[in-house]
Length: 172
Image (cartoon, rainbow, N blue to C red; front, side, top):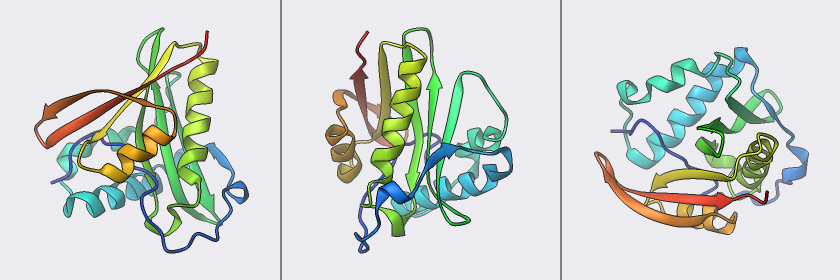
């Protein structure tokens, strides 16, 4: 059973020859919402083994524009291979959510590119910090966020296990 919100990124890949610079990060187009949804659900299925669509209703709203949310994508030709979202929570805080990189494109730097662009968006919004959460047992993902400059702030027990919460303080 997949939980409603998760962050997952670059875990493992056999193909390390990809160059992240050849994959531009851009804003998702409304017609790509279904492909982004599939990319996220595929990643969740890898981690959880099964997907409960009822727990992922927020993915149905991906194509709707909102001034306080930005969904970014990375494409390899016509195929979306990475995505991440940043949401402005208030005047001081933004949250990164729904990070996912296709299994065959992990370890190529795409997650890092997405994080950099999402954080840059939060900086343009002039928030003081960026937060995110992931499942604590996903140690590869936890280490990715730590390597990306995020600091573990706390653990919280939720309906699907233990969550790890992170924070990145932004310069004023």
